[in-house]
View 1 (cartoon, helix red, strand yellow):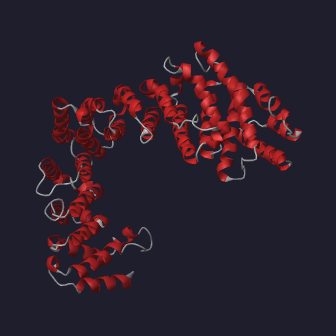
View 2 (tube, one colour; view 1 turned 180 degrees about the vertical axis):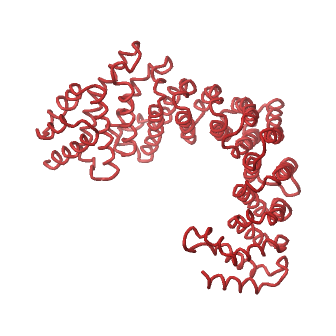
View 3 (spheres, one colour; view 1 turned 90 degrees about the vertical axis):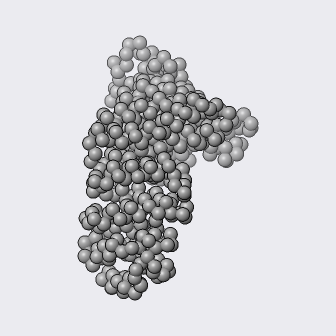
Length: 542
């Protein structure tokens, strides 16, 4: 490292001053050496190590105090900004170096540079720099917010691309949410930034027939929704004043989705927006979610059905049982949508004759459905299955997940389905665990587990295609053992013996010692050990 640093110093000392007029090739080489210097430095991480080196820090300070931001070539500017972001601790520790860097990045050497690539890179690097040192930016926050907002509202001679603007909106959010502004100031500035986008959306919706040109208006409307979503990224746990401002945007975003539900870009941006609002608004977003989900599910396609699934799963994982009201009306419609998106088997002679690409597509849609249903039970949103909206579909759900647990050979999907049944048994199999009006449904569930799932799982484990010594497949032996252990715990030893030993093992060539092992096993580990012994004994003898 010391020799490398000496070499680096010799290269830099050989460059003519001032740096603003230094030859581009020599300066570019020197800056690249500075940028990459921390890579490979020991002990790791190299950045922390080199930041303790006074000689290297002096090099960085000298660069920041030079006139390098006046260099005419964009590659030199980009390299300088790159290393400024990489070695941000210098700017954090020597705050007087920060204003010139921020000024250059947001001025004619950055955001307003003639070269489009320079402007794009400046947007990204400004975000990274602000995100790295928000704690020292308090005194610059108002000025920076006003400057960025002014540039976004009134583009100069050289416009900024729509995707690059999102970096700037996120940067504004960080300046408002992470630099130490008080709640009232956050609310005031956020309102000022949000208002133009809300008014723009309202103007478009009021004055135009968006459906007459969905592509053009969809791009305009989705850009405003994206701006709101990215602004919110600066707030991890927003105060009530900020939540009030964000909550006011929910209705207008729903109107956009109502106007153009068939537009892929609008749906995509609305889902990004909703994911952010779930994090920022918490339970306050729940009453409005069914209206959004109805439109998203009705109009999603193969390209974004996964995003809808992620949104539903996020609601379950974030709010758990409190999400029941928000997802209840969406469960059956979402599953029907997934089924409708699966490639039809009717066009082929049989499942085995379906082209491989269609089989892959079908499996991917099944994966989405399996994962969603597993999230529902894992996060205790299970009561949606017995609501008036979904109870008529519960038997089909059991059959669908049972097919996945028994017949699907892909190990991750199989595991997901087994975990679904384990959670169902955990929550609903014990006597008294369900209201009296659902006793018949509980009995049907237990019967389905005893007569279909347990025999089917054992048969699938014994199938030659199941490789229990493979790491991925082996996990499903563990999951099956956990399911059996929960069944024994919730339904008792007598019913456990009837379901597993009498109905299944005694119909196979299972050794008596294995049967006795299952009788004496009382926890998941003992059952798993006996399961593996059974597989070795039966498969080894085939």
